[in-house]
Image (cartoon, rainbow, N blue to C red; front, side, top):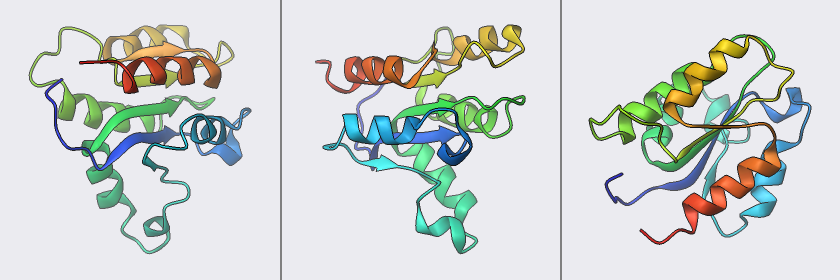
Length: 142
């Protein structure tokens, strides 16, 4: 990935935490208190009708994306991962981006869609694995 100045270190996408079986956003926020995190669920622009443009811009201006897959097929995260991937792949779509981390518990089906997601980024099973992966990405020397 080409180095650039990012507005956010982490974009928290996917299902809202209040609808999640895990407090995944809280776990990630607590693990990275020194990082700039964009959370659409708590961003004030979500309530004033500017949510789409703010989310779109924030995806493009974030260093990493963590998205939690919902129990139903890909509503928001398909868009989020696609925008992030396109904005960050620099024309080389031959491998997954380490900056995309998708939390996909075993309970979420269909399994064949997980293979598709793994073409864009790294698929992990829980928030703790996402934190470990984020540490590798955010604190590695490049």
